[in-house]
Picture 1 (cartoon, rainbow, N blue to C red):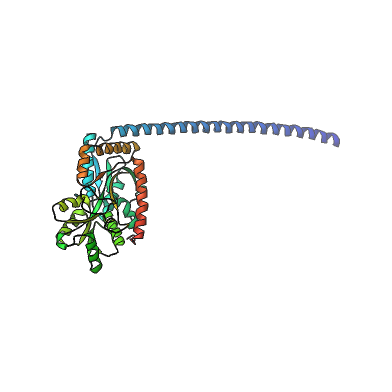
Picture 2: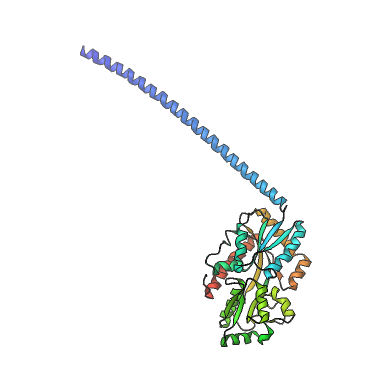
Length: 365
């Protein structure tokens, strides 16, 4: 009886276990099927999402291309972070006047001087990157980061280069009333008494050019800051400051009229506009040369097609005989590069000016 009951229970238990196992297998199949269904759905969603993203990117690219093709349909503003009449103001006016004609659209030069050009440059960095606000800056663009501690813009991250416009030297000038006729006489005077020199603010190209010359010639001088070249030239002519290293373009009319005397130029070679004026290198001061350049920039994220289009228009303007004649008449050498090469040039200038500022002992103020 006991054996028979045990066998019956074992058989019943086996059937129960089999039933339970079958149920679990069925349940697992359902779970696996659902998981496969979900995975398939996720895969389909992923594929669709990627397709949509690619389509959106393509459409955005087409829209940008179309946008660049329509550009400019409104007035373009070019911020010049220097005073009217300065070298970095006159050169962009000459070039963009021609570009305006080529594009058939108004281009307005907007002067925003102050703090060695950093105020206007900061405003340009904040502009919408739509191609309707550009920046025309001088070599000071690559000097200020080496001499100011908290420049409110990043010259690499906040802008893209479009093209240089021209290069020109600075010219060392004094008033005839100072009775200094050569650069050697100036150096001798500076070594025997305190003299003053004008500058468009610490950290600007004029400041660094003068510091480089002082270091090479071995004398000291006290800086008197001004907002721009016109103010500094006025004070130099009046004799209220002793010497000024002026952009050639701004000083040339006063040199020709006899109101100022040119002692030397900062370039490696003499300039055609002043063939009788020696370079500081010729005058016997090694490592005293420094070139001054002016270029055009756009806020970062400006559509590349717009940057390239403006680069091509600037190249075309610089090839114009009328533009070349105007620039060369004021001692400016028309200069063009591709946007990529100009970016590389600016990077090198940033490195060079950092080294120059450190060698001259110009601390970030």
